[in-house]
Length: 78
Image (cartoon, rainbow, N blue to C red; front, side, top):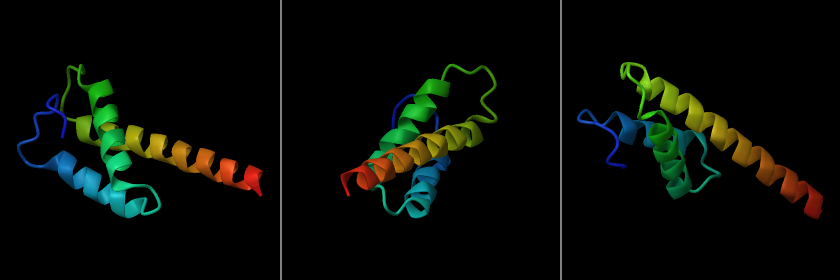
């Protein structure tokens, strides 16, 4: 995972695993990169308590957008 995180308890690894299971149609490497990007965007926050949940929300939103854009592209090709 990205070095920006202080992740002694493996929270982000668990988040990647959960999201990879929730989005089986999206490559796990892309899921991991999305979580890293979301966490990097939030790494400057002063209050670190809620970073895991905020990272998850941001990553889910990005993955949902990716899935929707991919579905629209598929529909346009047919």
